[in-house]
Length: 144
Image 1 (cartoon, one colour):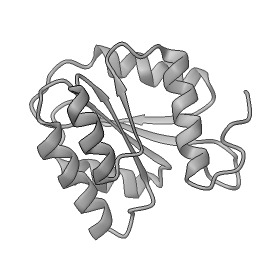
Image 2: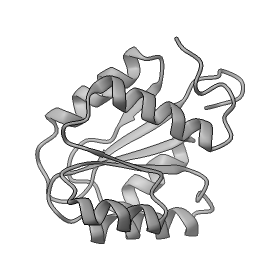
Image 3: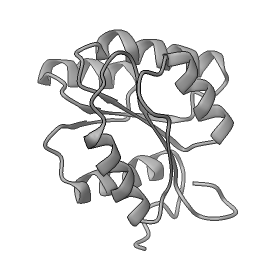
């Protein structure tokens, strides 16, 4: 959340070969409706493109939507590149089809939160506000 505006900035990305983006578009709309500033990168992005966009857009949260099963390859690469770019403070949230065992592994790697495919829009908004607050953004939980 940028101090001057008090608005949480989120970049949503589809990384890899997954071509299904209906869910991420619903999430983007829900976050915008909740007062967040949202950028959606589109389909078939690489980890490098996503990290570069997150840094350029100066986001608080990078949300990665994955349905392809490649999360245990893609997410560690994104985390590594964020660190290399000096942007390890950008919180990463993963959403989509993630096996329960991998949720624990992703959190151990440094993912702030994992939202599964059946997460309701209100739950997603609430979770991202909490993640932003955990980044030290004091007003992130204020209602809009």
